[in-house]
Image 1: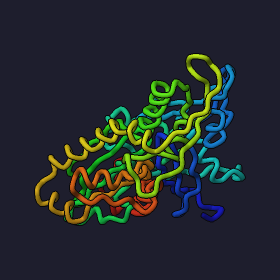
Image 2 (image 1 turned 180 degrees about the vertical axis):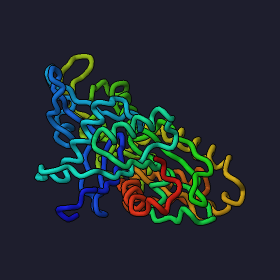
Image 3 (image 1 turned 90 degrees about the vertical axis):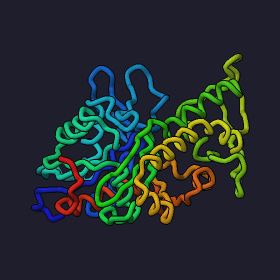
Length: 339
């Protein structure tokens, strides 16, 4: 962008767990979707990674807020502050003028009209002049490298932080889809509940997230098992500190119910799929994107259960953001973008 370019083009993957902004085909912001605010003045103190480090450790004058819950905006004011702050991260030194922004923002495919309106309003208040929206499974399919405008069917399962988006796509449109609120955040709270009931230990969201990353598994038996992860925290009965080793088998057992719900949703979408497209999906397989796709053994478990091959996207965490970036370059070409 030259000095006199008054319009800036941004692709934003506004996720429950992380927000990614792409500018000029490069990821310029990749931060956790969280802000820290001073309680009395509502002044923004920290954003992204700095705010995440404060999460669960604040005193009464500071509160940390995750503006998005289950893939949609839960706190309008905090969402606006977060989007505005993250856009400022791109050009921290530019103070002479603020360019008008052309944005493509991705939203869950199950969003209601009110939820879409909230995303549009937040984006416009943060400086967006032209705001387009794209459904997450469509963005994921484009980011994976699938030809969404071809007459062949392709199926995408995007397991994000707040929602799991399952869609069959053909001819530049979503043929059938389901958006369920079982995803990364659900896995994290499952782990917290399991540790409380099974081991009598109280852990926070960040520790549960760490357990999920280090020893998270979708299967009770893995070929390359990770080492046990040691968890420290207070015993719920005595309040004395305890340390417990957690194995991947335990986490596999504790996440079983949530993963079964995702399996049921995938089968439900396959039931609605027209037979010609179903044949294409069986031939090509189903693609997994989003952070949940990184859960060890998930692709194998789903392939065994559904008898269709599952492929993990090349970079599942950024597949949706990449697809949103490609959609931004071809705004005129893609009729499925919403204004």
